[in-house]
Length: 176
Figure 1 (cartoon, rainbow, N blue to C red):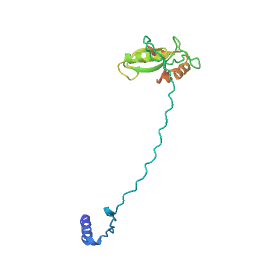
Figure 2: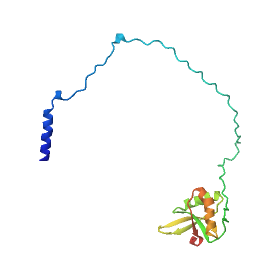
Figure 3: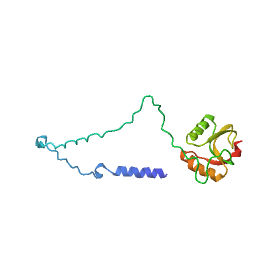
Figure 4: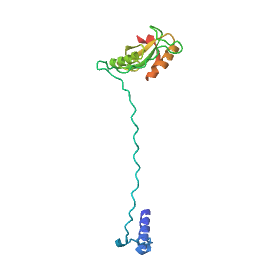
């Protein structure tokens, strides 16, 4: 019933409005000049172009001479200092170790060990089966050893973090 009333009201408005009841905007004719009335613009002088700046004489460049027999090697990697503040030196054995990664691929784990070694850090891998909640064999990348947990933390903060690796300190007894 409501829709019928709405249709009836709209129909009444539509019928009641005639074309001449709707206000139209006033028509404003445009003053367009006749083509004959148009004047040609006066010739203007061309703008003066600035002269290009003269280039300065080239400075001599020294180029290092490389002999053909020279071995091409990548630039040396900055070595990290193995000892850190707080007596943080790597030992041959100790209660603590730093774990850098746990990977399913032995090849990937050895690549990290090699990168650490190229920065003066002694690292090793340990193969473990079903570590934590992981199923299968994994390879831990570890740096060690340290007698004190704080020494391991200091070493990791100063040497491992700067290489972009996350780490945590673990007991070396977990190597087995």
